[in-house]
Length: 512
Image 1 (spheres, rainbow, N blue to C red):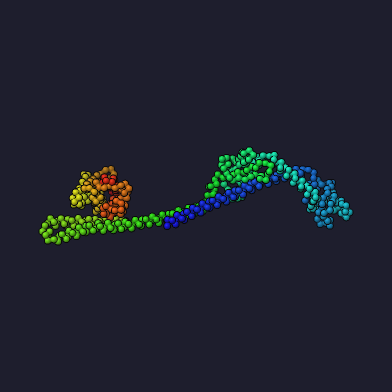
Image 2 (tube, rainbow, N blue to C red):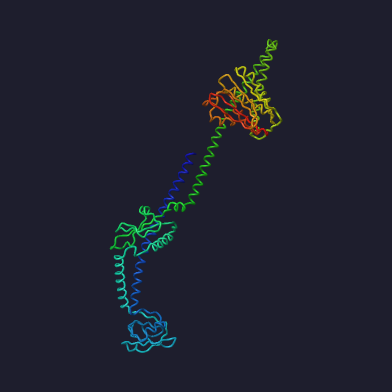
């Protein structure tokens, strides 16, 4: 499952990388096309400007021009003039294509008179026409004029190319406007900077304001201006985009966002599934461990009670009252031990379900501590241990559930006895300070590490050495103890060092 998830994520990342790469290639292609269009447009505009200037210069000379229609101003200029021209007259029988001499004379508002002279006697005379006729130059004359115009324009262009610097042929403002327009035509709308590299002098000119020269020189996005020139050293138009990466990412932001969301969702689901699997595995291990420990915990007192009952059946023992007292005491202790374990299990389950109800009444904390310590007198005698009670003289009244609080303190004492490789020495102190009522239980046991102390109050957690538990237990005593203390608005803390023992401190606010 992990390999499948990693493979899906890798494919998504690979796909995203390819999309960004393709978008970058498309961007470069569009920019290059735009630059070629810029160079072509600049070249054409310069040629067009030269042609227009030449035509404007020619029109100032007194030469025949092509006339379409006749206005009054044109009529005035042509009065008493004689031109060689071809006349196409509408709505007449005169055939086109004959060379005429004409004399234009103004008639009334709606018509004019043209007097025609030709070698063809049939064409002589005066024709009355309206002002919607067309004039056209003699074709041969027009062709000659066009050839002359082209020759003069080419000559002027060559003169401009060889005589003018690039800075005189185009301005930075014009260049910026043309580049901006061509980029927008290609769908590119982001900041750009440019400059023109003059190879003849190895310098940059026509730089856009704010251009970083070092970045411009590194750019590979460039094209030649006036590439068809053969008389001048080539000039390169160079351009770079400072926000190119951001622009490319924004162009695929939708797909990228969707991919990232899918990756996050897949990863989260995998993590959650894995976490559930691990937790389930832990729960299974804890359940098996709990069953084994509870079985052992129950088996020991049950076996002890069974042996004591068998002993009481012996006729010889019935005569000795001391023996009867001793065995009945053992039965009572083991029975109490069983009862406490069952109560702890049931109360922990009730806490988890939220069905445990505490019966709170005023109790003296010192009396509760004494009752808890009294349960372990016989056990401590067998292990050469002792409990040192240092109880305050102040009256420590607390509204609490005495039964559950005694069980909680008993669990702490029981742990101090079980987790001890020496003769148990337990010290229980009670005192009152500004923070509230405090109960301190210290021992000379094996102690635990800081890492273990952070988990010691977790349900079913037990301190162990490697994979083998040195002491049998069910792992719910301290969890139960913490829940009872917190149910009384109190807190419980632990201070411990391996090999030096542990100290549990319970604090109940005075207001409680």
